Length: 250
Image (cartoon, rainbow, N blue to C red; front, side):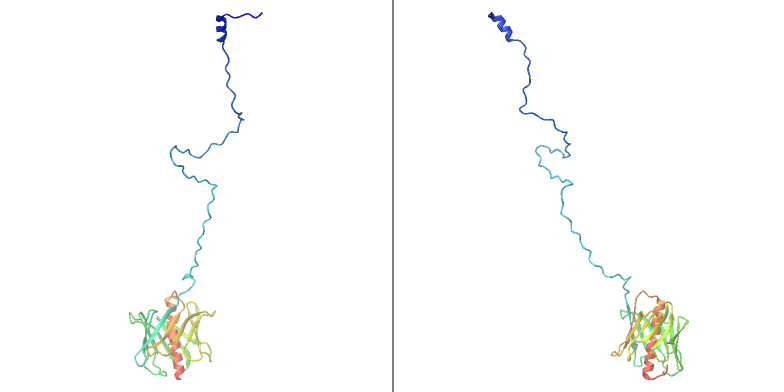
């Protein structure tokens, strides 16, 4: 039999403690794997974002500049040296050899005043323009094709290469060298090594009243002793060609 509660009992029943439970989430959250910590620095609020570059960003390939071809160096391509020979006066017995600039004198030439067949010796004398000392002398012989030299006090014969040739040989610091004519007529000559490489060339100035010709030496790096020999023997060969063209004896 249901009884009725009095007002005090009803008020006490209203104050019984209740267990509160949290409401369920609006959606279920599944457990996730731990995320990697971001290495991107945090940007303070109110500042514009800064552009970040990472290693994965692709850059356009840089164009490599091609190196232009270089000219051959002086060590591989020797620079020739051209000497200019000038004669003085009507008789052409005196002269000067100038360097490539045509102003720096290197040698003084003195030819004998005697005739081609005269035994007066030496026939050519080469002197230093600065000291006037004798560098070399050249002597021809009437009954021999050998030409005798005296360079810095040392004898140096220039021997004929044969009876019917216009070639002469001599001993140099680099071996036996040979002067030979390069044309049937005229005074074009060249000096070559035993392997056929040229060291010096002489070209006559036919249409000049003062210039006898030019002597081109293969390189400026040749030792001075060899340069002196090329100059002296070259002048002797030119004089020999002149004597033969005039019909004079050697």
